[in-house]
Image (cartoon, rainbow, N blue to C red; front, top):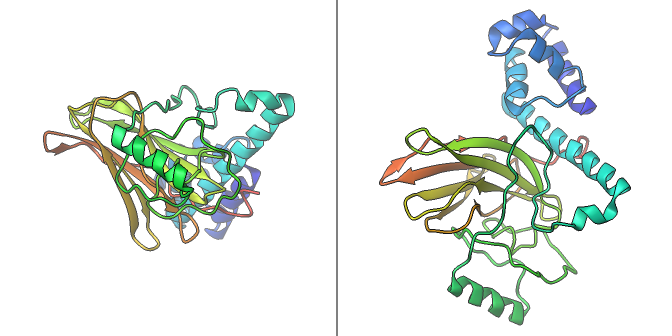
Length: 281
């Protein structure tokens, strides 16, 4: 967190150290909000980080990437504190998504049912010893219960299912943004999830499922215009997710929207994340 604050202070210094009132006039945030962002006592939102950089004439996308890496570092520190007080508590709920607490942001519940055909395919893959590296492009489903212990894990391939690729063990929530129905009513929350082991990120849509609408989740990597689209339509329990894109060749962000009867809702996107060795150590 302090590293990110130092980054913001450097951005401001490089711009000639404008006053926070001047910066506020160039952004949609008050001088006090911008000042707190550079104080290092708490991590600001991605929007504030972008606004801070923009007010200084700096690259907003770079600021967003630095912010995402800082958030990952904060989460790692939080996990270390929990581990030091109660090692067993970490594993009390293997279905819970690791996240940094931020107000009343809902935690996703992974209970989406797979089809019988997909379940049968998974059993066959396990029997054949080819569980890792399988691509399920465009399929949203539930990570297998009682998954076998991982002995060797390699970075996940682009467009693979994050749970088939064994990215669940160290998944981390990096950002969350509200998603709405096409008529503007609140739908749920889009989460950007990252696995250091898989070195990949993907989107998780924490919201209801129904045959009355289609949930779209797309991971995007601007560096090479890569995308990993997924969609789901059907009656199932809460929660759905998309496929992964590797962060080894550039930052990745998640995009999601809901469509009903040919009408698309507003497209929501998260911050764009790429690991930063300095900030995520």
